Amino acid sequence: MMYSFSFIITLIILGGSTLLSGCVAQATYEAEVEKTAQVEASLTSLERDYTLAIAQQEKLVAKNADLQTRLDAALQIQSELSREILRSRADVDRLEKVLSARGAETGAIMTELRQRIETLEKEKQELVRQSEVIQRTREHRLKELQATYDSLVTKMEEEITRGEITISELQGKLTLNLVERILFDSGQATLNAAGEKVIKRLGGVLKSIEDKVIIVEGHTDNVPISPRLKKMYADNWELSAARATNVVRFLQNEIGIDGNRLAASGYGQFRPLASNRTAAGRAQNRRIQIVFAPLELTTVNAE
Image (cartoon, rainbow, N blue to C red; front, side):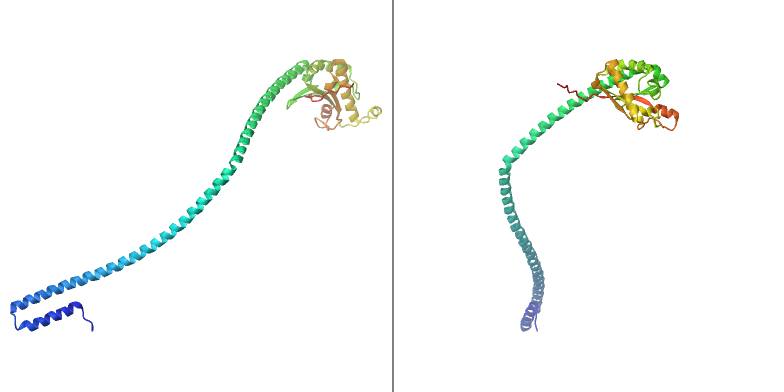
């Protein structure tokens, strides 16, 4: 059986007190008992403090173990970071060597890029200049076109009023449509007297347009050519071409327009303006059409 340290001390004191009980006075005995109680209280307090100290020690040991674990982890991270720093420094050294080696190449590329930018800037300025020239030229041509249109309307006012001539402008191209009856007799390709007068009045304006090619187009309706005319023209195509050619010859020989600026073509019934199902439509389709096109042809002088 195990006894506590305080219990054993109490027995010793009580035993001693018993042996002395016969020898000491009652007052002394009571004093000893009081001392014993005080000693027991002190022992109990010391035992409690000892227990608390043991518990505190255990907590400190546990806390120390946790701190040691954290320290070990921190040391591990520090070691890994040290290795990472070494690798990063090695990478930086390699990168510096690569950049140093490519420095000259990069400088050459930058110089080339600057030169290219300067070249593009000059090309841009040239394009802007050309655009301005083209715009001014276009505006000038539009003014000339408008002047030509106004002049034609003035000279051919009667025919325009009667619907025998129409003038149109599309995308900078001026076109005159002259109905067949004011130029040719029925089934004929030679200009009649009235037709020559009309072309002469037009001729002055046409001759003044020096930067255009004058294209004379012959057009017919879809009615087949008569047997009588087949002796001279195989079909409407040939008739339309013959009429256009005769107008061109008149402009060259009688008006004095340079042949380099003249062209003739026949389209027969294949480019109608109106439906061929009615007499009015067929009358519109039988026409001479004069088109002003940009002067793009060049003349080669033969030796």
